Length: 145
Ligand SMILES: [Zn+2]
Ligand SMILES: [Zn+2]
Image (tube, rainbow, N blue to C red; front, side, top):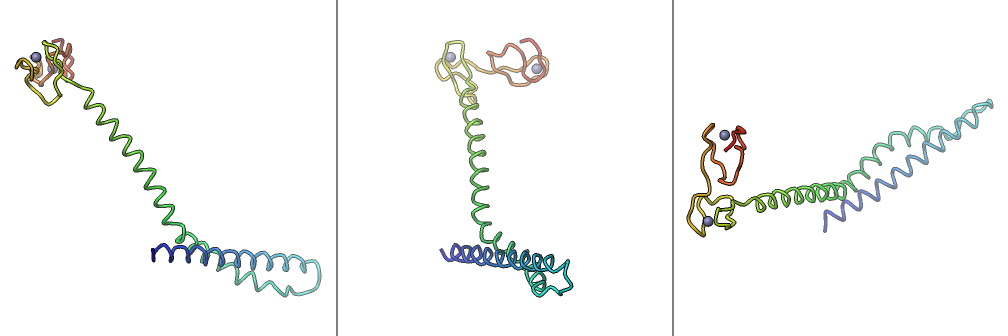
């Protein structure tokens, strides 16, 4: 809560400084250009030199004030994408099953059928990689099985 209050203060102070800075710069410039054609010296041009260095100060304070919200927003976005990708990955592993000759669907990590005890995997005669009995071609080397 305390940190949130500080951030709010930063945001308000930053906005006020930014507003004053912009006002000073605008008034200073307007005054400068108003007297440009005449033989007068600008009276309020000094405001420009006060307002100009205040611009980044106000901007930085304002940024600090809203950074927390920005970060939270960005983190949430990334977390959503990550969760979606994880869900897709989990779905993919759950979809892939080893189907035994007897028709029983076995999880991918099983090497033997839980229904009839037959082996569910064999090795490719070309490259030796462990393959499903239901595979028609070796996923590693493309050998017809
Ligand atoms: Zn079986
Ligand atoms: Zn192979």
